[in-house]
Image (cartoon, rainbow, N blue to C red; front, side):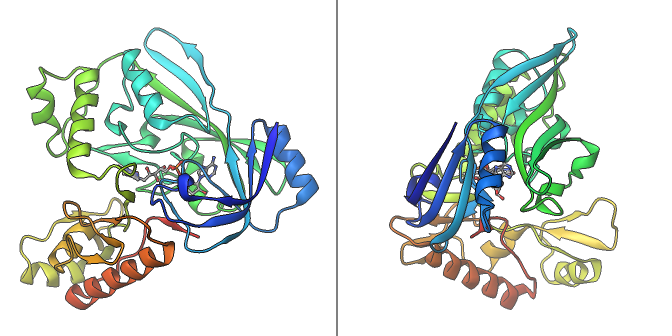
Length: 337
Ligand SMILES: Cc1cc2nc3c(=O)[nH]c(=O)nc-3n(C[C@H](O)[C@H](O)[C@H](O)COP(=O)(O)OP(=O)(O)OC[C@H]3O[C@@H](n4cnc5c(N)ncnc54)[C@H](O)[C@@H]3O)c2cc1C
């Protein structure tokens, strides 16, 4: 089945809660629905909308929003140690994590409480607390709108990297992800090396799956605003990658500046966008209905009634200030339409 809506209000379909609308929105259940829609309508402009936690609408979207609705979860194989599962795109990511923890399956517990549909998880290779979706994903299955065929890519073919995948590159505007397959395992493999995780886990009595999940949920809710209360899209900006010489010059002036190696490229250094924004004096900065969150400078928030244009104006101001203070360009991680 597919359901087609015209002139649809998007306020409840984006975590920023901005008031915008779209010409058409199509919800589909099966790949045949999708194939039929693309064959009949040949939409000129379209975008896959999952749960809208990483999408900022800045104006009327004069195209078709494609929304997957199938959310089945199936166990494909269980050899007593590893368990392969197939999960359809509309399944809520955190419900999947909660289920895996209840089942005693390790692999995605550090990715607790990331607001996402399963179909969006491989797109930016969601990650947190030292884990990434790519560590568990074995296959991504998508509908190719050029050939109208279903294609399966293995982990390597997805070309996962930090907040990156083939779905943000060559397959952008081509692939509609239908399902993701993951391999979880029964042998405990706690990954506690990041930030306050170990302390929070120990205070709960040790490294069990449910203690890790609870610890991560608690850390996240103490740091990040809940989009249901305060509209936001998580980290608005990517951490910038600069030439080693640039980082060296900045470190001479700001010895406490966080900086990280870039895997596979020792000529580059990754900086922390949140630190740069904070040190530009913008944490808690407010511009009308929008602002920089007071606890997490990477997060832009809608205090109520903001338009996408308000958020963009603030984002441009933030980028300009960081450039003025540090000479470093930062850019949005969020998908802007
Ligand atoms: C409070 C908060 C905290 C967050 N914390 C984190 C974090 O810790 N780590 C992290 O990595 N991210 C984080 N994010 C970002 C967000 O959780 C991820 O980007 C997530 O994957 C978005 O899922 P979604 O279904 O809402 O995607 P949407 O916003 O609907 O879509 C995001 C992108 O994926 C594409 N897409 C969605 N579904 C499909 C599909 N089926 N097929 C093809 N393309 C598709 C869209 O076209 C778009 O390009 C956070 C966001 C919020 C609001």
